[in-house]
Length: 163
Image 1 (cartoon, rainbow, N blue to C red):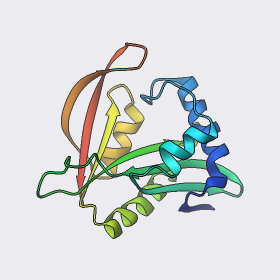
Image 2: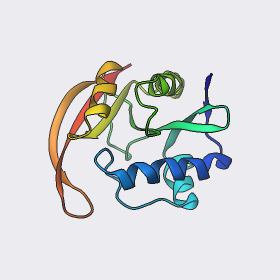
Image 3: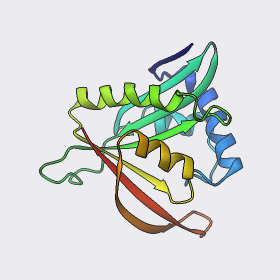
């Protein structure tokens, strides 16, 4: 059975291993620099702009995590309170309900925090990620080019969900 709960610092090591595997495989995340536990804590588990960070486990195995952050100050238009989402599911676990369970918890946390819109900006070549967010109700609102840290140009697709 998959359980979802808020992430805690003790999750950092497994979260680091999961995202580093995704980075090494390539093609689905804009991250190109491997994480260590300190960077994981600062970037996803406990940044100042954190709304929530959820983890999904089956027994003691981390299957995925999802983070929701506040935008930069003054980035919200008057009628929106945005959160920016990032999702990572362990290779081989996609399409098994992990992302859906994470998103249910993240959506609830977003609503409790007063977020009324979520932005998912995804690499255009991340077909699985694009399909996942579409299935969760996100709709494309923009497309733009943004180079990866190595200079490779990869389009990004912004998908939004109004809560």
